[in-house]
Image 1 (cartoon, rainbow, N blue to C red):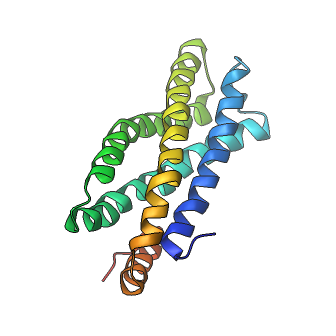
Image 2 (image 1 turned 45 degrees about the horizontal axis):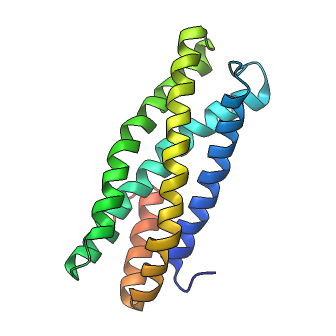
Length: 169
């Protein structure tokens, strides 16, 4: 779909994120605490914590440290500034959901913890879906149109290394 691997990889991650947000929204909309004894409920909590920690936060960090700085260097900082601001709202919300999901995995939900998880989850779903739409409509096409082959190769290698937990050299 995209001409370069960075745009395609980010697009694929966006699709996975939207699928996870849909699962979270469906669970919250039932208005009943997720049952950790149910394999689907336990899997949702595990997937949510793992995806936010391993994928979403890394994705944000990569965009901010690599892509947005690249745009800044050529005088196009508005999109990076806007998306970084959105990241600044979602990052602590994601970290809160990681903690809530892990606590629920261990102890289940009571009325208060479910209410807090539902609020945090609903806010993350709302913010994340809009954020992904913006990136799909603006950031990815811009990357696809402006990135030369050498930059794409360098950034893709850095992203793969970050995904594997190793530092880029």
